Length: 145
Image (cartoon, rainbow, N blue to C red; front, side):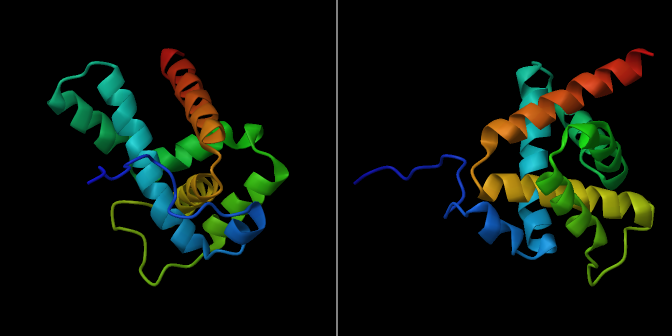
């Protein structure tokens, strides 16, 4: 019996056109998990203990932090990527933003998540990693100022 393959690849790689036709909230659903995995992997790679890994995840995987993240990487986005962000930002969930998050931050976060979902579904993992690294660098520069 062969062991299952648990590689982080979408069940079916989509073309950019196919992924662009997906519902923005579906893209955001996957993209939220992609972002969470990046943040948690980064915390793990730093050698943090479990408490500090969890604290970092809570601080960086929420609407306001994700809104800040998209603001930091937006200048690096292609026209097509920016279009996906706008599509996600303008999508209307059937629920409102959580009480402790502003609707604007929630919409921006949905844009980031949509982008991450889109890049994941199209197999652009190198681009995901590059944007996440750029976010980390810009965030570190912001904190040191």
